[in-house]
Structure formats: C-alpha cells, structure tokens
Image 1 (cartoon, rainbow, N blue to C red):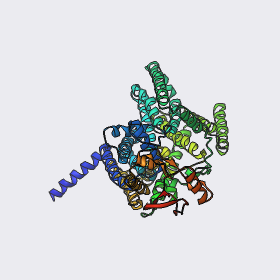
Image 2 (image 1 turned 30 degrees about the vertical axis):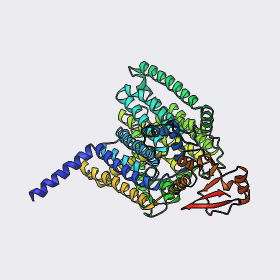
Image 3 (image 1 turned 135 degrees about the vertical axis):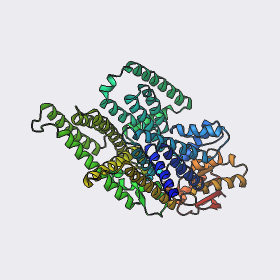
Image 4 (image 1 turned 120 degrees about the vertical axis):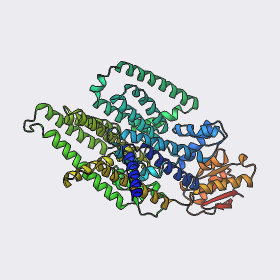
Length: 575
C-alpha cells in the first residue's frame, strides 16, 4: 500500500513538473514525431514537384553535377541541404532531415512565443495543436519551403516581443530573421506587416526606450548590410531579373493562374475549409487527402474543437467589452470617439470592397489601419496587463489577416499555403480553449485546481496529436510514384551507358534531372490536342527517350515504343 502511495506521489510530482515546465517534454515529443515521420517520408519518397527543384538547386550550390536548376526559387532550404551534400551525403533524405530539424526549431519557438501570452501548459497545448494541424503535420518533413518560412517568422516575432518587453538587444535579431524567412519563402516578407502593427501599438513604449537611437542605428546598418549582401548573392547567381519579376508579381498579385492546375478564384476558399485544417477523418483515406485536407472531410474532433473555440472566443470578447465599457458612462458619445468609430466603419467598408475587387495592396493597408484604429479605440487608457494581452491578440489577427488576404486574392490556391496562417490559427484555438475553461469554472462555481486544469490541457494536446498521427499513418501509401521515376532513371543508366549524350524528356523533368544528374526538358502530352501532335513534337525535337509518369493511360506514340515500366511510370524509346 505504501509502495503504491509512493509511486502515486512520484507520478504526481512528475506531472506537476511537466505542468510548470513542459518545454523539454514538448521537444522530446516533437523529436519523436519528426523522427517517426522521417522514416515514413524516406520510405514513400518525395511528395511533390517543387522538392526536386530544391534538390537540383542544392546540387548547384554544392558545386556538383546536376541539371534543371531554377535559381529564382527561394534559396535557404537548398543552401542548407547543399551543406550536407558537400559532406558527402548526397540523397533525397537530406532535404527531409533538414526540414525536420527546422520544424523542431519552429515548434520550440512557437512555445516560447505563446508563453508571452499564456501559462506554460497552455503554451504546450498550443504548440501541440500547431504541429498537429493537418497542413502542418503532413508537410513537417516534406522538403517544402512553407514551414521554414513560418519557422523563421515565428522567431522574428518572438525576438520582437521580448526585445520590446524585456531586453532591447533582442531587437537586433528581428530584421535578420525576417530576411532569413524571406529567403526561405519569398511571401514570408508579409510578416513585416504584423511586425509593423505591433510596433505601432507599442510606439509609446518604444519611444521611451533609452537605447532607441542605438537600436535605430543598428537596424539601419543591418538593413544596409543585408540589402548589399542579398543583391550580391542574386547578382552572383545571375538571377536578379527573375527575382525582381517574381517580387513584382507577388507584390501586385498579377499572376493569372489560368494555366495552373491549382487555379481557383474563390476568395473564401481558406475560410470554407477551416474545419478541414483542424482535423480530417476518417482514419483511412488517400495520400492526397492529408497533403490537401480540403479533399477530405472534417473529423468529429474538428467540430468539437471548433465549437469550444468559438464559445471561448465569444466569451472573451463579451467579457472584454463589458470590462472596457462598463467602467465609463456610455451615454455621452464624445466627438473623438465618434470620429474614431466613424472612421473605423469607413475603413472596414473600404476593406471589404477592396478585398472583393481583389486589390491586394489596398486591402493590406486597410486591414492594418482598421486594426490599429480599433486598438486605439478599445484600449486607449486600459491597464498595462490588458494592453499587453490585446497587443498580442491584434498582432496575431494581423498575421492571419495579411496572409489570408494575399493567398485568397491570388487566383491559385493549394492547402499548404494555409501553413502561413497556421501559427495565428493555433493561437486563437488555444486562446478560445483557455477562455472556455474559465467560462466553465464561472458557470460551475467551482474553481478547479491548477493541476486538474493542466490535465485537461494535456489530454487535449495528446488526443489531437494521436488523432492526427493515426490519420496520417492511415492515409500514407507504401510509396509515391516518384520512387518509380527513380527506379526508371536507374534502369536507363544500366540500359544505355551513354544516356548523358541522349535527348531525354519527361512530364516530370525536375525529378528525372535529379536522378540522372543532367538537364532533362519537359514534354507534356496535355498541352497537345492529339497524341499524334505530341508524337510529332517528340520526333521534331529528336527525343531519344521519353519518361511518362502522370498520364492516366500510356498511349501508343508513333515512332516510339515502350521499353520498360515501373508502376505508373513508363519509358518510351525512339524507334
């Protein structure tokens, strides 16, 4: 009996320690998840097209023989991958490993960021929610650039907050991390807007900082060095024109997207799929349903979390409004408040109109203006504690809003773009859940112990993570078709030792380029009206081998014969 009691005390003390400092546990869980998903990703292979572009660029940066280099693409992930290539480990798995490491850094940073607003166990639960979102979990070791862009944005915001609130020296890290985020994913540059709104909200505090002049001077020097360094880097690569064209297209959202398979002009696409981005079901399904959750259906867990979040956030807004306006006499509406209220309504109307007419820059400016005015209107004269919490709420609203506007207005949409909104999405889920817990305490008139509350957050986190992991495992295939492309490429090497001198084309050219370490041009039957026209194209281009991997059926091509097939991949040889 005493032995059981001692064991119970040990377990109780361990749980209390986790509740007060769960960071180590979070890192271990994230490391375990990343390691397990790495083993799966290494087995099934590359999940999508762009990863092969990053691999080919990594070969180029490592000074190795390769092909199909696309220098205009974001360079951070290929650069990091190339470092391991230089060490002698040249494999697709390298980019998966680099992605997994960055994901661990991101979850750790998100926990530290959440701790600026929540207690440790709430921050732990929020971080688990963050990594458990389908759009996060399915891409966590994929070799894509979306998560790296978000990770360094998280750290930039974190250093911004602690730099303003605790030690101004941390502010020197904000700009370099923002630039690294941009190098990871160009559109991560939009994180400048949440940074701006947070600086505006805390402008008075910034003005009173005794090191303000040193900070401004240091940031200006950093800005100059980073601009010169970036320009030298892109000029050295010979990609300046491509970069400027891409930045102009991103800034103005002028891409038509008409020729893109992801073309979708629906402005509310991401809002309509919010439930799918929390959790998808059932346990068994196709690989595409976890890579693109909008193709699946929301799970029961998704509905439960959504309802709890909405109730909690509604209670938070109601309580905040009651606390804010209950302290003053609302009857006399002074001229200043009337002006602020009217101007806010006008800006909101302007924002809705500009968003409807797909004016990206105007919509972003109006969003930041509305949020700043709302903050001034609602929290001018509030307590420091209320203002501190509200400043983070408004910053995360702007984070979600600026990326939502950008990706909604762009005419092509894929679910992984929601990763840019995932930190803000997870933030408001845990905010809603924490407020729901307080509402339950008030209604039940029973104040639960902090230990019991900790247990509730642990259960929430582990249930969501377990469900997300089970769904991922239930949807993953034994391999992707890119494994078949690799097998086909290896076969060509043995079949024709002089393959480097041959004209080889494919409908998945960047993958074949990676495996054969040579330039392989694209050839796409879907761009031709008939198989005959495509056959003429191959013959006129003097193509020796054509590797087909995406056609639903492999047609007879005049002048060519199928010499080998691997799964869905076939190799045509010129007669």
